[in-house]
Length: 121
Image (cartoon, rainbow, N blue to C red; front, side, top):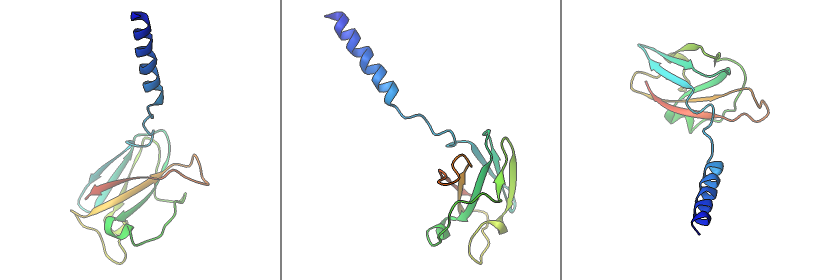
């Protein structure tokens, strides 16, 4: 009887472990630093990541699609984006504003898996 209980426990443990979803490999690969009028985005992954950076309130009012042009941040590298280059209609973001950084890689160009982070400048 004890062996059956131990076996059942181990079986449930293995099922639980095998069914747990792995973390997304792109989930925490970017880091962000805000300087005077620039946002530094660092890529800690082995893939080039493509970006779209937009002011948070503006994101709900626009229609966009992922693309494979600039801006992009190469693997294990970083880039600086001027606040004036962050999409905010005809305005410019400033320190304290919230922006959304959308990012994706080119592993599936027909249907890229887009991730996002909200950043306070």
